[in-house]
Length: 209
Image (tube, rainbow, N blue to C red):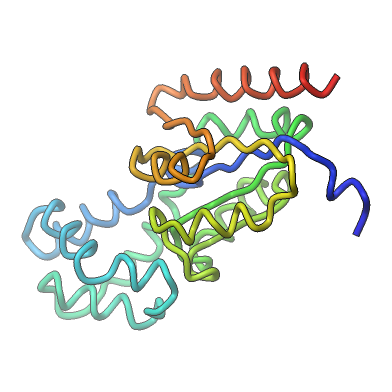
């Protein structure tokens, strides 16, 4: 390993869906609700209660998830359009255009509650895999935010002296990382959070001089 891997550096840790890519579960819940004749809020509640942690952690296989999810929502068989809808919903958000600049000033790490089967192709389609140094996907690591284990794996991979900033669209996830001593920013729908990242990176550059 090169010596530079151990030098202190800015590390920008980003959530993916809701920060860099559009959140795909809301369109999925609406589609399932329409087919089941119920509300998307009820579908979301069923997902969170019965499937969320098992699916994101990798304990539940994707192939087993779809029929079980359909049955829980009162649909006999899962529609083949559901996975297509979910994947197509993960369109790049405006912040993606900032990554080339940010990656010249900091290491970019991604930390996502997701299925790698769904997320990796979306990252590749948006070209994000070429701009990131490390990618932590819960279905591969088994660690689901906001459980502290999801953040501890980041700290274990960081080098001594690294300065970390975390961005997530969910307040509970930002606060969980703050509890471990890492500063965080909640991504807002307007995208004004990107200015906070720009300011942080500028401050890191000044300190390095």
